[in-house]
Image 1 (cartoon, rainbow, N blue to C red):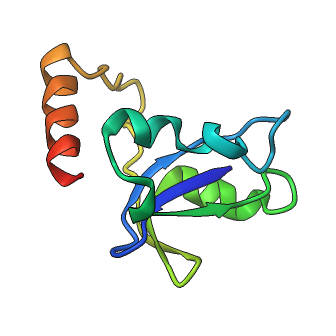
Image 2 (tube, rainbow, N blue to C red):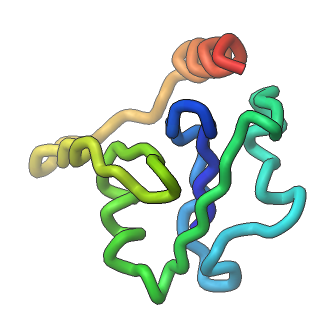
Length: 108
């Protein structure tokens, strides 16, 4: 798993999720694909790599919590709420996606 974060604040802007073929996330320019699309300068970013298998417990926590990066370490903030039994979490609407993209572009 590759975690891309704002170096100045520790705010996570992207994580690559898990991938059995690339357990430490994408390499080279591919590591910055999502942040390049968001217009965030690479100089403002930090990279943190976790191994999907060797650090499976930490990866699992990252996938289930809000978190930030501080001094190269994961700092868990809070657990994502679990949907109630039978509750379906709706996907984002197009308007919500546009709003999120606009917010991200302002932060860059």
